Length: 533
Ligand SMILES: Nc1nc2c(c(=O)[nH]1)N[C@H]1C(S)=C(S)[C@@H](COP(=O)(O)O)O[C@H]1N2
Ligand SMILES: [Mo]
Image 1 (tube, rainbow, N blue to C red):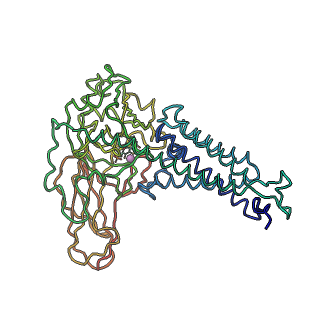
Image 2 (cartoon, protein in one colour):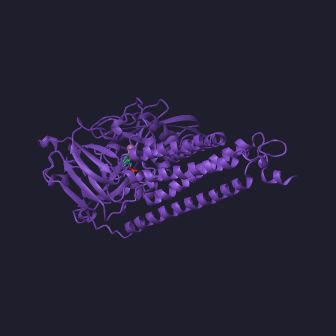
Image 3 (spheres, protein in one colour):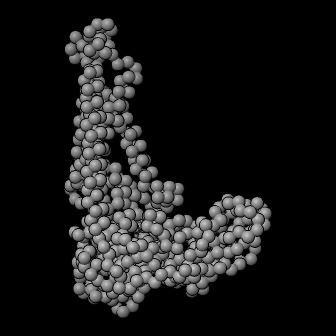
């Protein structure tokens, strides 16, 4: 082997495009790692994957969002981010192969992806301004430069005759490539790890600050739920849902970690005679009340899991609004919609009438005895009994504006959901589970029913096409909470379908006809098929 061949080996067949593809992947990795590091300094929400994911969520119509929730549940966000990474990987491979022949075009392609990330970061409703462009811009610049450099080392070294190997095959700068590629991979990994570490350190401060908060004893404590409110059977939901088990539905790919000391809530808008800006301490000093309230998501399918009950501590919102000079429409107030805005750009619109009609609409600070968990809206969120979460329960709230349904459509309404959405009467069989195989004899059928702010009056169970039979109702806590029920079924061998229906205090029976969750919540009855052995 001549020394020429050693220094300038040949690249035959697939070798060159393969190394090109590798260069593309390394460039993509470098771009994301640099973006990660810069976004740790700017803010995690500005990172390109998070920004593009957020933009995708913003553009998701109601039907698709619903499909994603149905199929991936709370993993929908993970699936989205993995999807984005998969698409990026494919393009990185393609751009790398392209760059072998067209260096400039390859590098330009990386910059185009940077432009997409930049546009997404600047276009999000919670954008913090031009600084949000930095992660995508710096990341793309690093990625483009690396791809350009690596592609150069793969290029045929035919420029000087000495570098053309004896067989006439143009060689390449193997050593240069290996050195540059390894250095870039190591630097990217370091940048990525450093970025992650910085972000974690930043959120540790917010976590520590939350940990120091001591909620005052509420002036009006929640009466303990009656002992009989909990049906004591395996498989039945806990009457109070522990925070760790409470469902989570939101558009945030990165959970906001708000610093409560700097946080403020503004109340302003139409008919607000005394607008205010309140701090977290201002709220802590007010009269606090504690209430059990069941929260439900409009995306909950019949029989689905997006419902839970917590002991909320908060400021009565109706009182606070009245102090600001707000009057409900029924008393001549000019605004009929209350729009809550969050730090992550969410907008949620509730009827002013409902918030001010005396029900326990809350600016909640506490959930089950602790400050709100970050996932559930720390430092402050809204909770309004009787309304689906998307029209009432703004997490990470920062602003309340009084306006009209006629002039402003909040986030979900723009995406096909109804302007007004009181919770529909629903019931769910918690036990037996679908396709269970209980023994013949007495089988306890049990579950929950809810019709927040109206209350549940009857729950009935039907076996196959038999008559509706009254279930035993557990004690009612309040009409703002779900109610448990049980039914001793004399089960005989064979396959059976159990169906449940509830009747609320207005006398309305849960309808048979199934509707989809879009636009204002699923209707219909929950059934479970079991085989009795
Ligand atoms: N900022 C913000 N608040 C939000 C949402 C959101 O996406 N962003 N989702 C709403 C919806 S659709 C529901 S059902 C409830 C869910 O509250 P949880 O996650 O605490 O259960 O929050 C509401 N508040
Ligand atoms: Mo929801």
